[in-house]
Length: 260
Image 1 (cartoon, rainbow, N blue to C red):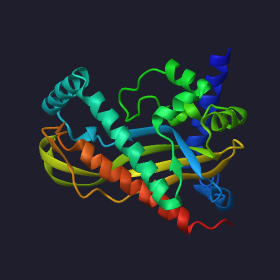
Image 2: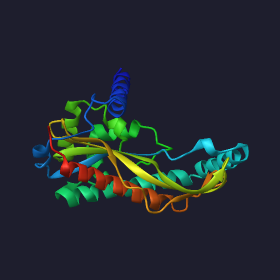
Image 3: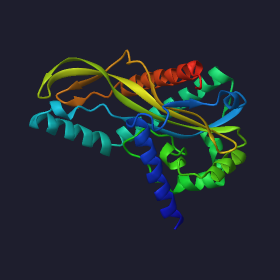
């Protein structure tokens, strides 16, 4: 019964997310209670997820589709993609923590400290290992945290000894591209940008800062695609640059935010 209740909550949270992104006026894109944010001293980042949305399937033909499928399958089954997603998630998670410390002077808990919260650890242990997204081992995806009730969020802050908990979703999207390809034949270079959804919940269990749509700059380095297949040698560096820019944009938006 408890699992079913959590599933219902997750569906409702997902619907609210879609409304926030697609329906103007339904939910504010950026809200922050700066007086309450200003009282925070110690924070735990309890949710992180990085989602890659860079593929362009429209430019492939049957040959490049086969090449792409084979390379993607090898990348996945060899475990190399999973290793990259963990490293990318850890880098972005660390970059977010560092920027929160630099911007506000906050002490940010390490992922290992999250194990002190029994209820949180139990949810982590029941959750399947992500495969296609960036993540941090021992840290929930934001959607999994979003189903926590206000009381459970208060309990989590108390168990971790923090003033607030935070989550972030980073979506990597096409920024620009260069090169030339017809039907997937040829070579192109994609320069991604990151769109960040950040949420901060204080010790009362209430959300005091939420930004649904902070857009970072287009990355200076690019990801090359040849014959429809991605060259991933520098993928982690490129995505880390994009994520950092997204976090900078999020903080810049907060600094200039004025409530109505």
